[in-house]
Image 1 (cartoon, each protein chain N blue to C red):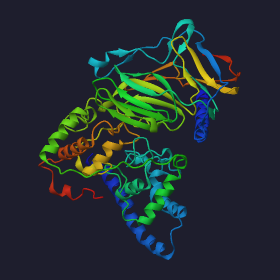
Image 2 (image 1 turned 180 degrees about the vertical axis):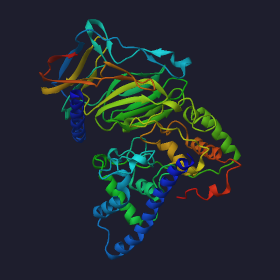
Image 3 (image 1 turned 90 degrees about the vertical axis):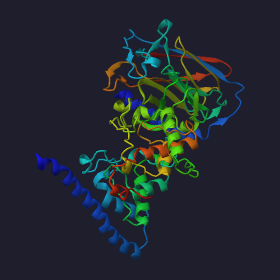
Length: 269
Length: 252
């Protein structure tokens, strides 16, 4: 019984390590190749995709690779052109920079590792190859990114103001009064594919999918997360209120008894 | 199955027309004709069970009547959408759309709008709604409306012709439809199932009727009502100069 409890996370951990390790190993090989000959766009992207991405995201980009069965949340299906983490308005395709950022950072709280060990050249090439799986990228253009202004300093008063915005904008209906993801609407939330989806627990500060800096959180409020029930609050609350809300949300994760090392595993952009 | 294939066909046609929609040219139509007609239900109207309300019952009530099939006098079907297809030139878009969240219902339940015509989402209720639109199962907008009387522009979100299904993630009983068309030649049937489209340049056109589908398939685990696939029928109609043509659709 004990073995079984340890077994599954351990196997999963080994799998993840192997994915990340293959990324490191690959990058050295690729650096040599890239120096030898310049990248050839799509062919380069395809090579990178087949090597690192296909196992989870599938040869057709439909998120149904052989390893996808072991993953929750499921790997992204690229054929729909729907991405959670973007700088563009609700419903829009992401920009090239958005895709590069996701690949570079990885997606917290999921099996998607950070691919920073790959060359930027390779990350850019593979993001272009990803786009080829969805006809939306041929038919539509991403809308202009939202503008993120200067962040006012985080203070006790901005956090307090943010708490009021949290109540007024009804964030608690899904995310819960204490930000633990247990609000009255949380039980019936579904993603675009009809799968149950959890409202985010803000006390888990390390795992914001689209990044955990105030700018990242501000961006997520403003753009919403396509494919999920998280709506865009652009037009619903002011820019000042969004900064206050970001500060409040950050404050929810600052629990005094949090181990000191937790700060070091926070992702930097 | 067939209905789904037809719908897919229509959506693909819509996507193709999206390219053409760029080319829709506004012009005066001095010799325009009109199209009138009605949509009627064939057979006995099914009993549709009310939809239970799961949240905010103080504002929304205990349950709502299903709006999937609204029958008026003479078995006329309200909320069917009629579109004239393949129009590349004609009168300008004159209508705009406001999709209201009022007493926990989307009002109107079925609407139509031309690509690029002003469209807004509104919340008249003192509670949070989020207006979440899907085109071909893909989110085209998902907007939080936490404040009473808040209005958010969705014009740019409706840039592709097709049928947008609208839901509220906060309230499982709420749903609505927006038919986004590539020309201003469309109508939504009224109480008696009647419609009228004016100012159509003379010619022979395909005219299609869309209805959301109404045979009840029960409820999903969250209490959202399930109905069968939308119904689509197409007829060919000749519009005479300065004259009038009629077309009748039967919903089975």
